[in-house]
Image (cartoon, rainbow, N blue to C red):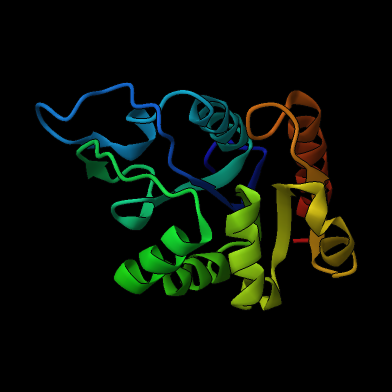
Length: 181
């Protein structure tokens, strides 16, 4: 027993990197989750909170490395992703979509805390066709499409990337989901 009350539920938390780095590029590599500051801090803390209850994996779509586990040691870098063209280039260089599909299939629920350009790209490339539960915290632009899917929960982005109310809603949802797993 892991000490987590809902340890049978496997959660994948996916976000993108941040333009704010807490650590400069000098020295040894450090875990990716510890490099980013700014808005990423909210996601890291939420991931830790989830990890107290559920088996949780934090994955980061990095502008340099593609999709990486938050525990992977990396050096800070400058190229973060913001535009659709940059997302397309990142996919061509790293194939993060294939990694995303593979990671999602190994989890009961995927939480996407991503800007709308990432969500749009994932929609266009069939990521939401996967059968596990997806919680997407993003722009209201996607509400109709995401709420029409039986495996999706849409939450409008509030706060830096998540917001306190959305965090509570997600945890309540996951506790209910765990009763079905």
